[in-house]
Structures are given as structure tokens and as C-alpha cells.
Image 1 (spheres, rainbow, N blue to C red):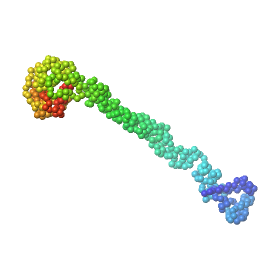
Image 2: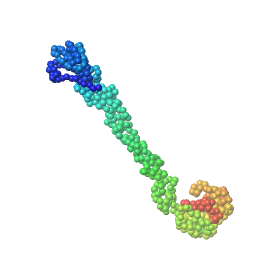
Image 3: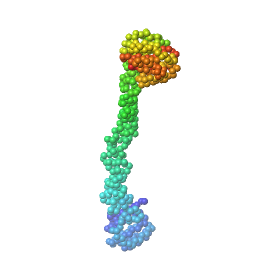
Image 4: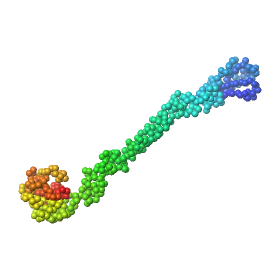
Length: 482
């Protein structure tokens, strides 16, 4: 709606009528003055017709003529006290000047006496009042009675903001100037939490936001990854089994997987660990104990079987046909054809010095008597003569030999043959044909040993897998430390 205001100043009146009469015509939100408005003033008479002159007699007795629009008619016969007229409501068709109202009158400075014009709006005069619903006088906001701490517009008519100490809309916390990423309440007014990317000092060791993870430098618990925490830090740790980390475990105390040659003995897996994988130094390339073996294996007598098959895999010994052992002899096999071919005194001295000898059927009594002066003789021949070790019955189950070689029972009809050596003095029995018939046993002499292997091991009646267990037992006797 377009509003025109007719205001006639003293100068204008002087120019128009050259009168001393002061005529105040005030219209608030009035329409065009020539559009049929009705004005009540204090007059004696007023007659208006189309094209006529209106005569008004004022209190001074002066006459003023005003020409109105053609065809309009105005009759006025009333008396009004100007002091009771409200210029903001004079025109009932226009908006009333009140706080917050956009009003054309305000644009020309004609707001009610209790109002002032600010930015084209009539507002209460005087100092700004926080909470009156009008933003003025330096207020950042004013939403009336809803102003208050915890609101978007605070009780002092300032806008709520993170860090002002007032918990406002959308804030999880606000502790004032103390807000900071190292505080319980962050600079974004959110409660500090692991994974938010803000380091809460004293509670978090690290926080890299979305990157937090159990395989990262900063774990999902916001603590720095460390060896022994049970979490594998990718690219840095090979393993991490928490409290089980130890130098003898699969995962070492450095969070590295245990390997042969790392200088750390992995219990139950490695026999030895010398920090390298070089063979020949007492610990093999696979961290198995190298036996410190002497280089030669002697065969005293004849054998149809290639006795080099008795040498365990991974062990190198030179097979030599001889009945005279020396300092380079690891062990000597005495076949039934070798009985009487060795020097009894020399054999005894060599065995007591750390040597070891393995006997065959019909040679066991001669070797035993030479070393121990036992006076035994052949007695109680038995067995099926199929070359294999007669492990039909086991003796001395807790002996270390059986810890090294699991006992495998065979049928009597598959056994080798020989004499019963149960009566040999000092002999520790290991296996035989029955509870009363011994074929395999041993007795130590000094730092050496006599292995009584009283069966026909040099023949070839049994070969292949059926003979593999016999080969394993013979090899253990040759190389296993005493």
C-alpha cells in the first residue's frame, strides 16, 4: 500500500496564503489528500460544492480558502480538541505506529512521541531493553521473553557461541574460555572422545581421528602402539602376543617372529641357537644340535647290507672297513664276521675314552667280555631271522633311548634272530623277543658305551620301509650323545 503524507510547513503556508494562521494538518498513514478525505477542524461553518470556495473562520477571525477536487463534497460541523489527537492513528485505514511496524510516517520522522525511527521502523525510544523483542542499541539479538542462557539468544541479548560458558543449542558442553582440544570439552563444544581427532591431554596418548585402529600407530583406545600390547602394528611389528612375548616364544620380546639364527632360543622348536645359520659350529642351519661327531664310522667284519644306511639323514660320516678305532672314530660296528678281529685291550681303552661299539649276533659275547671281563657266552638262540630289530617286547620304558625313539612293537615272526642276553651283568635291557628274552641293551664303560644289538642286522632278508625302524634305532646308537 502506498501512503502519502501531507505536511504543510509555516513557510509553505506563508507562500500560499500569506496568512498568520497556523494550520496543522497531520495524517498518519493517510491516503492522497485529494482523494476524498474528511478533515475535522474547529470552524464556524463549512459548505463545499463542486467548484465552490470553502470559507473557514478560525479563532483569529481570518478566512482561508481551500479548493478541493472537483465533485467532492465535505460538510463539517464539529469541534475537536487538537491535544487529544493521536497522529499515529489519525488515519484509520493505515497501519498503526507501534514497535516493529514499518511505517511511511516513520520515514519522515513523524513517529509517536514515545517512538523513535530506526532503519525505517518505529521502535521505543530511550535505551535498548533486552527482552523486548526488538534488536536495538548494540544488541546482537532479542527474541523477547525467550531470551535466556541455553537459548540461541542469551539472556544478555548476545548470540550464543561455543566458548561463552553457556550450554547452547547443538553444544554437548561449554566450559567457557577453557574450551580446547586438550580439554574434556573441545574447541567445537563437543565432549572429548577417542577417535574425534582432538588430543585430550592426560587421558589420551594420541588421537588421529578416523585413522585410529588397532593396526595403526594410534590404537582404537587412543594409546600409542607398543610391543607387548597384543595389537600388531602393521609395517612395524611382525607379531604381538601381549604378555606372552618372550625371547623363547614364537613372538619375541621385540615383536618379531622367532626364526633360526636370531640368537634367541625358541623353546620346544629350536634345539640350539647361535645367532647364525652356518652348519658345522655345533648348531645346524635349522637350529638343531650338531653332535660334535667324529668323522669316521668303522665296520669291523663283513656285511651284505650297506651299513651306511644306518647313518641318520643330515649327518656325514666316512664309512671305513677297519677293526682298529682311533680318535677320529665316531663308532664301530662289529659284525658276526668281525668277532676275533679286534684287539680286546685296544677296544676297551677306546670305549672307556668315549668310543661306542655296536655288536651283531654271535659277536656280542666277545665284545662284552673284552670290555667288561664278564665271562658271558651265547645262550638261548631265538627269533625269525628277518634282520629287523626284535622289538616284540619293550624293557625300561623310561629310558632316554625311548624318549628319543618311540617304541614300535613288531610281531615275533617279523623279528631278527640272536641269543638271549638277559644274563649279561650290568646290561640295561631295552627290547627283546619276550619278557624273558633280551636282544637289545647297553652298558657304559668310562665315558663310552657298548651297545648290544644281538640280531642279524647285516643280512638283506628284509628291506625298504619294513627295515626303516631298525635303521633309525641303529643310527640313534651311532650319533646320539651319551
